[in-house]
Length: 381
Ligand SMILES: *Cc1c(COP(=O)(O)O)cnc(C)c1O
Image 1 (tube, helix red, strand yellow):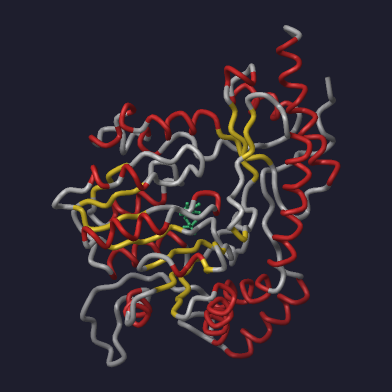
Image 2: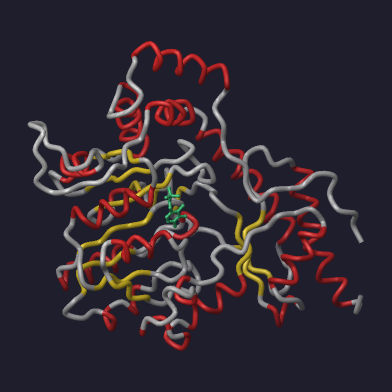
């Protein structure tokens, strides 16, 4: 059996700006005397991101969760919103915080995204929108979702927290739906420590969102619609400006790591590598495998613990399923027999360490430990 790795291999490591570059930016901010409220850095970051993401109308926020809450307010969502249980709980919490009932829809067994063929039977007279997630950065079936939304006059807000910089058939990910949310949390491919953005495909939304992130204040000091405080500060924006110059290289490095994983993990019975379709220009946010206990020989949780004893911190992402969380388990759409695919996938997925700085040696070691975890079972060890 392999010895535990000499140092802990984390599931991710944040992309960091060069300290010297950041010190220069901070000097600029200190000299300006403006620390927040859409200062020079935040305005520049919005412009840079608009270009990078090919999104004409875009605003930055203090985090992705507040951005998503504001998106729901902007589109006046109420009643019920159809979403996926296979997501980070923030997606669903946002609906609750807006007084909206989440309605869980099962997922596609290949993409792990909301299954568009199961949406229509969940639509009721209370439904106002669909909130799909581009899970692990793999685009949803946006065409089918759009045709259903159009037919029933529903809004579509995409949670693209994982999909920074992704394109499908040359189309930027922000071009689908009414609004797309990005998260710039430290663990995402691109970060501003904490942060997020909305990209809009409807005219007029940016102006209202920018007011809403600043208490709802209008230029004359009046408030027509009460807002919240969701502004990105100048230091965070500076981090973003600097990291936008590094993120292309980071994605490239991640792509290379993913290729090594794919090479070393191919052909293992019961281990499926989750990867995007050909048409996707991908951003490699996670390296996810799906373990089929029967074929692989051990349960995902056993593998997860086995990796941990070897100093490898994988992550059961997303587990538990949102529909099985204490706060959502009593919704009628949460029942397990309505969500068979999502429940099966949540029991089998495992995100392996992936980030640009991960070494070839570390990737090879992780793969060796995974192979050996099976063999030890085969041998009855
Ligand atoms: C990270 C994440 C969020 C929340 O974003 P924050 O910026 O951390 O608030 C929402 N949805 C998904 C799918 C995420 O992964």
